[in-house]
Image (cartoon, rainbow over all chains, first blue to last red):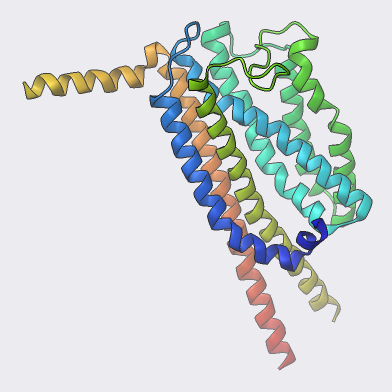
Amino acid sequence: MLHRFANPTRFLRIASIAQPWIAWATILLAGTGLYLGLFNSPADYQQGESVRIMYVHVPAAWMAMFCYTSMAIAAGIGLIWKHPLADIAAKATAPVGACFTFLALFTGSLWGKPMWGTWWVWDARLTSMLVLLFLYLGYIALINAFDDPARGTKSSSILVLVGLINVPIIKFSVDWWNTLHQPASVLRMDGPSIDESMLWPLLLMALAFKTYYIWVLLVRIRAEIISNKIRILRLRQVHG
Amino acid sequence: MGSYKDGKVMDQIRDFINMEGYGGYVWPSYLVTAGLMIILLVITRRFLKANMATLEALENTAKEDVE
């Protein structure tokens, strides 16, 4: 099944068909999520209207970890089975993941100031998210640092796999250490602890962020496949 | 009567933007998130378009060389 879609030519064909559907799904989900989040959900009884930051902060933080895990899986497949599409998928995920991590930190800071009285604290959750941002930036820098793309891909894939240890640290940091950050209220063993009127816009925004990621990923993978073709054609011109 | 209603609507809009005094934190969160996501999408699409144009030019050159 995976091999069917892993063929670059077949992937390009499927991607060009799927892309407009994914784009419309993103727009519709984000539109509905924003409407429910801004107009049709109550203010929090403790945090007041500032709770609306949650509808962008939490999906961005989820996607920051999801993108990194996806990148590590793709990098692992690329390292073990030497599949070029897996390496391209890892490379294409990095900018989106870095963007989501920055947004989680930025919106978290804007939420932290009125609620905690500070823009930033060096506690486990915030620091491990900052480390995640540096891992993304390190990966992007490393993969582009070599003249030979194969060496860049191998080194950066190893970096991603080593950095994967940071993902469970982020997730469980609020349970393992004392922190200002609140514990999980949706992804819990005993089910979500937030009211449905807030849960729906949150889940819709999370879905919108996920389809946005797939949208950008499809465009970026197409661009990277063409970029590889360009490199091969140029090499052929030089040598022949 | 109309101006009274208009005043009420304006008050509602002002309240919505003010967000109980948290507007200065809520709106930058939404604006920066939307802005950055749109910028990343635009950059990625431009990257694809530029690569498609380069590939087409290279393939045309290769065809001319063969001819």
